[in-house]
Image 1 (cartoon, rainbow, N blue to C red):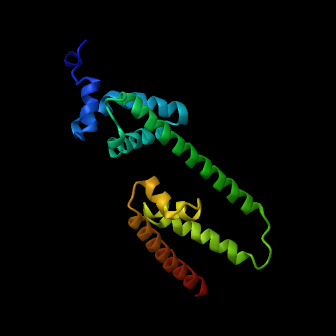
Image 2: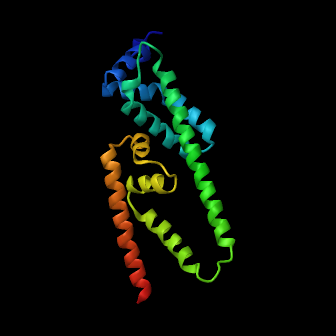
Image 3: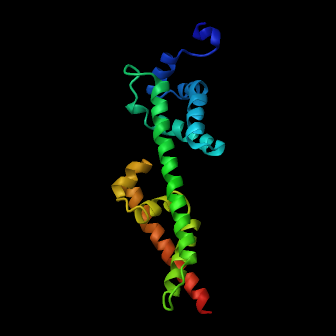
Length: 190
């Protein structure tokens, strides 16, 4: 069957259009390879919702990074599978960090707090709670900077943001946290 009989462009046509930045080729690529990407994600993650989310992330990342795809050196489907492996790895690492955080919180909850350390514990809980209230991407940037000890350039590269934007988000996020903590402490004093 030719691509005309199937009702869509051939894989090579899709790949060239994708590399050239044609949005219709992105839609064609999604129609053609989203099933493959979803299957890879579902098998690796074991959760349909995560697999759907990561599948979307794969195509967004692929579109943003299409400049690194060369249709002459390989097939678009294989390249998308490679992007999927990276996004799956990111999601698994995120799960692991969440599990570690939850386990640490459970251990912390089980510990007997010595007198004088109550305020430190309360401050940590308040900061964690306030961090959850901050909008994205600022919340993610602050977590990467302070919980994962990533540098601003590492964060900019990972999130595909300009370095100045990352620095601004950190500064504004810290100011917001400071203001919220002042409010919380003020509420406690009354």
